[in-house]
Amino acid sequence: MLAENDTLRNVLRVHTIDSYSICMDIDSAALDTARLAQVIDERYEWYLPESQYPVIEDVTSTSYFNMDVVGTTRYAYCNLPSDQVPYYISQTDFPSDDEQEGFADGDAQDDGIIHYQIETHGKVIQMAYDLDEDATITNIVANHMGMLCVSRQWTQNAGQGYSTQIDCNGLLPGVYILYINVNGKVYSEKVTL
Image (cartoon, rainbow, N blue to C red; front, side):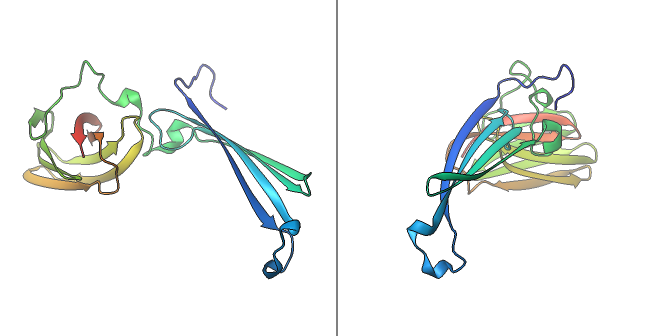
């Protein structure tokens, strides 16, 4: 249950129905369609635009044998955004459109404790960077819906001439957002893969 005055906004509901059969005989080699029980799972999932996993999931599973209901099982899960860290990307953690500074591929960013340059080579994102102080760095590649596609985190000492690659070969071609979190300060860049 959500705390008093907590509200989830812009939630997307996904409804799916799965149907499958299970064998009622102990000997599955003697499979006969007359001895199969049908199971129908009806699933409702509610997603936040920034979440890879459903916030609430409700599943009803009903078993049928000879078109008669044998039994029904129902369960639900609640995965609050705070429970999904590091997979949840809070919209309030990122700059608004007015605060974002867009940098074209290859442009350098020079603000705060990190100074970086982003380039893409096919489906690999290359980030060259310098750090003014020791930092914990998290890179997140998200699609246009804000769903997490690739994530990695590491710590790095202050210094110059660092570089890292983010392999995105499993992703479909398109425009993605690269979020760079450095000691809690978040930068974002559009990348085309």
